Each structure stands twice: as structure tokens, then as C-alpha cells.
Length: 204
Image (cartoon, rainbow, N blue to C red; front, side):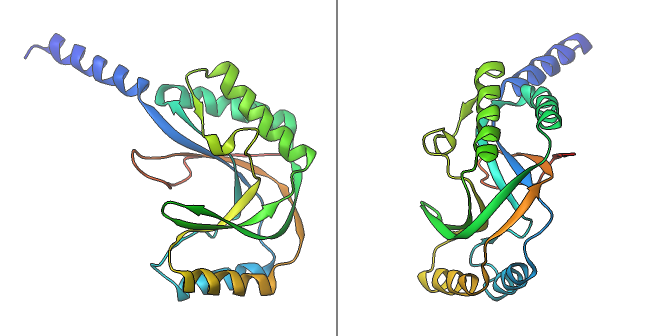
């Protein structure tokens, strides 16, 4: 195989990869949970290790979508520009709830549908619609269905574990507020539901 043929093949492979669609999650981060909540969450994760997917880092998902892999660098730039303009905003957290999913229950704390939270969601939705028209926003994060929340645990299948988890958390959960101080991006590997944060911008 000639050098030119190899180069042409690599270029074609690179172009195909850039066109590949990937699922991404945009998270908002803040400083920490109240200590009582973090202590119980840590203990429950140790007690039920391997029986669900634990999430310790405090965050809530702003939006989820599919986007071309080649568009991710520009999307990061636009996220930074938008949040530099928006600045930090406050969230109010109150009570525990859950979603029923095909892989098990998803347990979360409710985030109030305040004007700043909904405005942030709309800015991201508009960004994807207008500047990344090939992207597809997850139905769950559409304007009509958007439920601001941050997740405590994923995919609890056993009812006894669910009851223990929610019962223990309800004992210590109190209303609290926090400033959103970071926006983070997760690009999910093919076929995966969770993945590591690969990019973060500290909001001032």
C-alpha cells in the first residue's frame, strides 16, 4: 500500500469519526451537599456497593443530547461564552423523588423550577437548535418535559434497596440553596449511560 493510499484512508477515517454522533451530558456543579446528606449518601453507597450506580459529586444535568463528535470542540467554546455571560446563579433544592427507568429507579433531589434555572435550560436548547441543527435533544430534556433535578443514585432495581435508600435520605434531607459555579461536559462512549467529565468551566 502506497503512502498516499494510507494517507487517504486515514483522512477518510478521521472524517467519518467527526461525523459520528455521540450522546453528551451538560452538568451544572456546585460546592457540596449539606454534611448530613453527604454522610448518609456515602454510608448508603458503601452499604449497597454493587447494587446500583452511585453518584457522589453534586451536580444536576442541564441538558442531554446527541451531537456530531466533530462539533464538540465548538460546543465547548460556546458553553464557556454563554456561561461567562450568564454568571453564577442560585438553585433551591427541596425533597427527594425518583424516576422509573428501564434499568431501574433513578433517585434524585428536586431542583425548583426557578426563572434562572429555566432560562439556563432555554439558552442551551436554543444554542443546540440554532448553531448545531444536526443535534438531537433528548426527549426527557425537552421544554415540556424538563424536570430540574440532581441525581443521587442510578438504576436501583431491588425494592428493598430503594426503600432503604430513600428512607435513610428522607431522615436527613432539608431544603437548601447553592450557587451554580461550574458547567461540565460528559461525552459518553458508544453504548454507555455514564462516563467521566472531560471538560469543565468554572463560572465566575
